[in-house]
Amino acid sequence: MATVIKMPRLSDTMTEGTVATWLKKVGDKIKEGDILAEIETDKATMEFESFDSGTLLHIGIPEGETAPVDSLLAIIGEEGEDISALLNGKTDAPPTEEAAAPKSETAAPTEETKNETSAAPAELPTGVIVVTMPRLSDTMTDGTVATWIKKEGDKVSEGDILAEIETDKATMEFESFNAGTLLFIGVQEGQTVPVDSLLAIIGPEGTDISGIAENYKKGGSTAAPASASAKKEEAPAPKQAETATPIADGQRIFVSPLARKIADEKGINLLQVKGSGENGRIVKNDVENFTSQPASTQQAVPSQESASAVKPFVPAGETFSEEIKNSQMRKIIAKRLAESIFTAPHFYLTIEVAMDEAMKSRGVINTIPDTKVSFNDMVIKACAMALKKHPKVNSQWKEDAIIINHHVNIGVAVAVEDGLVVPVLRFADQLSLSQIGGNVKDLAGKARNKKLQPAEMEGSTFTVSNLGMFGITEFTSIINQPNSAIVSVGAIVEKPVVKNGQIVIGNTMMLSLGCDHRTVDGATGAQFLQTLKQFIENPVTMLA
Image 1 (cartoon, rainbow, N blue to C red):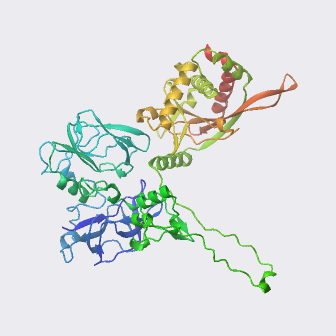
Image 2 (tube, rainbow, N blue to C red; image 1 turned 90 degrees about the vertical axis):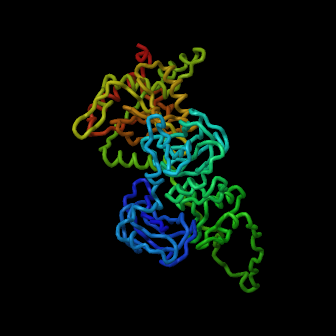
Image 3 (tube, rainbow, N blue to C red; image 1 turned 180 degrees about the vertical axis):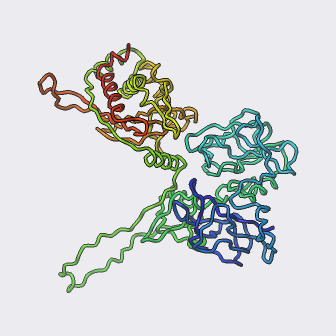
C-alpha cells in the first residue's frame, strides 16, 4: 500500500517549508534512510530522510516551491501502483511520514493513564498497552530517553519507574500506570523523538507484538525499530538529529549520528574519512574501518637556485567548523528571550551599593553552626522586601490590564550545561536568610542535575540574575516574562570611595534593574532600587 509523505515540521516554529532540492526523482527506488530532499525551514536547510522503502511514485511539491506543513510532499509505494485515489484528495487514509500513530489505533487517555497514552489498534491482543512519549511540560514537543530503568522482559507494576526522560526543562522520572511485562522498547537511550511517538509496549508475557511495533513505525514514529530485537545502531534516525556537520573548504561532510559518536570516541578526524553511503555520507563501517594515514613526508626540496629566493610563508592548516544541533532547552531559551526583547520595551537603571556592612553581617551570620548565607541570598531577601514596598515592580502586563502581584515569588537564574533555567523561590519575603540559602542551594543542585520539576520553574513574579561570582562587575539582563523586571547583580569590588569627605578603601557592588516600560515607569523603578540599596547596605533592617 502506498505511503503518503507530508511536509514535515522540522522546527518548533515551522509553519511552512520550501523544497530546496529533490535528491530523488519519480521512478527512483527508495530505501529506508535514503535522503529524499533538502527542505528549507524558517531556521535552516535540512536533509529529509525516508522512513519507508519502495518506488517514488509522485512528487507533490516541486523544487523552489513553498507549502504549509502537512501538505502532500510525495508518495512512495510499489512500482506501477495506482495512486489516483490519493491524488484526488484522499490523502488522509494512509499513514504519513510525520504523523504519530494513527488515531484509530490510539485510545483516548483516561484519568488513570494521566501522561501515559494507552493506545490500542483494533487488533491489539487482550491486555496489551501501547505507551507513547508523554508530554511532561507545557512546552515539550520532543523527549529524549536519558535512561531506561526497566529492560525488555522485566515485570512492571503500576507505579514502577520505566525510564528517565529529558524534556526541554528537566530530566524527569516516568512511571507506568499499567502492570504487565515490558515487551518492547521503541526509543533507545539517548534517542530523541516527538511527543506521542511509540515509547514502549506492555502486556502479558509471551505476547506477540511484532505487528504492533511495525504498524507504529509505518505510522510515522521515528522511534520504533522494525522489531523488538533491532539493534540500536541500526535504528533509522531523522537527519536533523545529527549532532554536528563539519565544514571542509566550504563543503559539508554528511555523517550519521552513530558514525560521529564512534569517531569522537576513537579521536578520528572525519575530514579524513571517505564516506561509502549515499551522496558520500559517512556511516558506521567507514569509521570502524578507517586507518589513519601518517603525515606526508614528501616535502618538496627547493633547488639551489630557488633556495636563495625569499618566498612568503603560508601557514598550513585546514578549515574546520561544526554545526551542533540545538537542544530543546536552547530552542525554548531563544524563543522566549526573543519574544521578551522584541515585545517588552526594556529600559535599565543602575545603582552602586556599599557592601561593607553586608560583608560584616554575613560574617557574623555564618558563625552560627550549620548556617551558610551567600551575598546572593542577601540580595534575594532584600529584593523580596523591596517588592512588598513597591508592588508595581512585582507586576505583569496583559493587553487589557496590569496584574499587580502581592505575593513574592523570586526566580533565581541558574546556569546549566545546555543554557539557563530559572527555578522559583516561593513566598521569598516570608523566608529567613538561612531558609533562602538552603532553598536556593537545593534548587540550584536540582537544576544542574536536570532534576527540576516543571512546577519548580513556574509562577515567578521577579527574577534575580547574578554573574558576580564570575568577576562581572556590571551587566544587564533580558526580562524573564511574564515578569516586569529583573535585577542583575555584579561582583563586589574593593576600591577607593569617599566617606565623610575622606577617601578610604571600601567595597561596592553594582545592581542593574531591567524594567518593562509598559508596567514600570522610570521613577517607580528608581524608587525600588533606592529601597533595595537601603536594605542591602543595612542588613539589620531585613531582620525586623
